[in-house]
Length: 565
Image 1 (cartoon, rainbow, N blue to C red):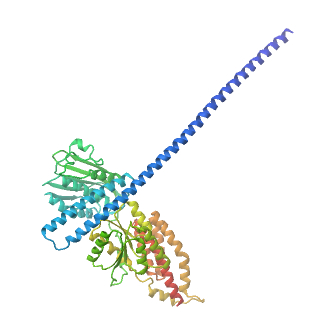
Image 2: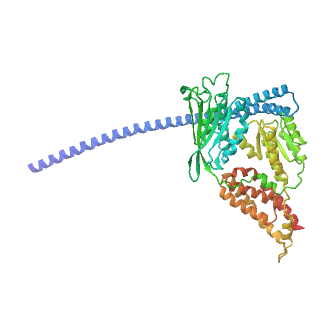
Image 3: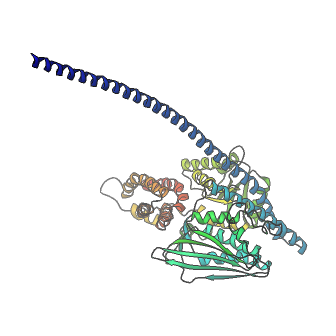
């Protein structure tokens, strides 16, 4: 019995131990659950705080976006308001200078022009800075002919340099490719700014421009631009903050030199945008050398650049009809100025209106070679008027009338709005007589297209009969109608997306198909688009897209009439 009693005791102790362990495990489980519950509550609280913070951050982000949009809209409006009267001042001064004047009067007009140009430069600096801060500054890549760029800058600035008693010398490395790829406008802007600065702080000295090849490979060249002067120089302390906005050297702030302190800051931002570097080497009293380095793509030097004018000029009649212009501008000074400029260019058939509604009414009552459309007008602005005119052209199968936007708002976003509305080009106020002349010459050539059809080809097809009751021309026209609208839409998508290769192929196919049916005018449009796409400049073809469908409809209507006859 003693053995049984001992065994029972051991079992009892084992049960007690197991029970104790189960109790401790249960307590541990309860503590764990409590801790988990506490952690879960903390997590829920953190999630709520995070959601609240996200909402706050989103509200702050939206507030910043709205503030940025408001700032951009404000700057755009201010730009237009400043440039509109400036256009009148500069334009009238230019017209006045072309008339017989005494020496004293010529000097007075020159003072007016210089003051207005200075004000325009200050406005442009502020706009550029605002666009850069807002991230709206875009590069416009294209061909860069550095020799041509330098020659242009010399012609522009040499009179200013000589007036300051300085000599301007140029040294351009002959190893640099004839044609490169980059933003020619921004490179020109930087060089002009640096040369003007060098001239401003130099008297009876030299301003030397050097353009040197630094690196050369199969597809790119690294170019170093230097502008060296023998002027007052810059202290080491001033050099440290020289490229910051609104910062000027101590001597540069004096009334003797003037300026806003924005030029170098804008130059640095533009060079950075082009993924380059910029700097300065200088000693006070011993002159300065400002430099910047850019890597530019190579282009085939033998590749010809065919412009829209060349393509369109091939089929123009020998005697062009007189140019008639519709001018829409609500500012009386600008209307008078542009009408004077047009008269100076020999264009006397000009109708002037003051808002978009009057522009549409004039368009419906008369055919114009060209429309000059102000961007901001009361009652109906230029954008809405353009959309309605394009809609009328589409409905009535009219040929597209070139519409040129005129505005003091030169922000890239506003230019894009003009193009999206259906305008063909853009001229910023203030503009000179030469700029207006070139714009009219460019688009006047495209305003009177050639015959819709090449009738010799059409008659050859029409004379070929088929075995059935229908003519071959009618059958081909049906096939053309089935395929072409879809292909035009595909072409539009490739152009807008910048797919140059695909756009080239589709444009070539459409051109060939149109030529085979004797469709002349539409085929020239396809040929222009094909050429732009081949050159990798599809963006230049975008203004032509709106002309495709009306030209296609006109061609089909003409072929249908011939087929019935």
